[in-house]
Structures are given as structure tokens and as C-alpha cells.
Image (tube, rainbow, N blue to C red; front, top):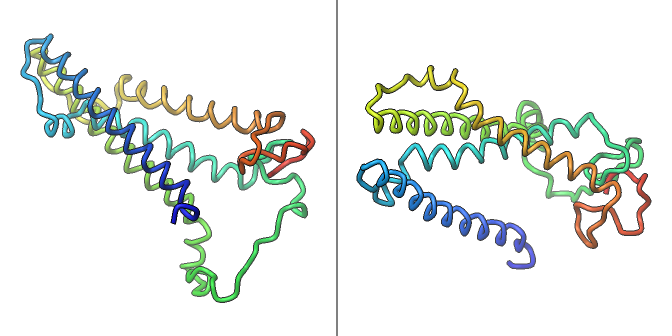
Length: 213
């Protein structure tokens, strides 16, 4: 099991570790802020439903799914000479898929609409995850603003007012730009830099001009 699924197991454990730490430290920081304002501290369960936690969490998930979805789509047609993250410039250099008889995914065998959906299922999945995260980020961010305004004795704002305000889009774009910067660095760094035995890198002996892995 470890040999076949080690990568996903470690990534899942790291995710659980870091989101748990986010919860603990976010809860402490949020309660510190409430106490300074003369408000009662929230229980851990109440904090998990607060706008502060929901907004902060899905604000980051939203940008991650946007990054991955866009990258999946952009690499269909666009190329970067010398990058391990790009398809080869010449389609004839691409490795042919290894097909095992009897193990073809059922949408391929079914054909028709199921095949069409399956051909784009990766981008569709990332698109749906982005939309869900975007909506949850919006709702959490709105609730956080309402809670802040009520704490100051100000009237709450509508969801639409929050959506069209600068604060929500500042939260979004500060994450979106960093995600695309990270992908750009990965695409360019793999032209000249190597990591031995990593599938994200070209072989150590490969020339800088080699495109694809």
C-alpha cells in the first residue's frame, strides 16, 4: 500500500497537519482580537463556523484550484521551449499512451457523451472545485465583514455590496497572482535546473533545449 500510494498518503497527512495548525493558531489569534475589542472569546466549534476561518481557508483553496485548472487548460495548446512542464514542441516527440486491453476506463468504452465529458473531466473537476471555493470564500468573507461591522456598532452590508467592494477582490487577487507566479517559476526553472529522480524535472543529463520530461 505504501509503495503504491505513498505520495498521496504523505500529502494528505501534511494537509491534515497544516490545516489543524491553521485552526489552532487562527482560533487563538481571532480570540485575542475579540478580547482586545471587549468581546467574548469563541469556542473552537464556533470558530470553525466563523467568517474568519471560512474566508481564510477557502480564499486559499480557491486560488489553488484556479491555478491548477488554468494550468491544465493552458498546457493543452501552449508550449515553453526547454521546460519539463511543457509538451514537446513537435507532437511527434510525445510518448504514445500505453493501453492495456481490458483496463480501459469505462467512459472510453462507452463512448458518446460520456467520452466527451471524460476527455475534459480534469479541467471540469478543477473548475467545479474553484467555483465552490469561490462561493464559500465570498460567504465567509462577507460574514467576517458583517461581524467586524457589528463589533464596531455599524450596520451590516449586503452580500452584493461585499462582492462589489475592494476588500473581497483584494483578498482574491493577492492569492491569484502568487499562484501564477509560482507556476511561472516552475515552468522556467525546469529549463535550466534539475532535481534528480523527480518527475517534475528533466533528466540531469538532458540539454537545456529539451522540451518535456
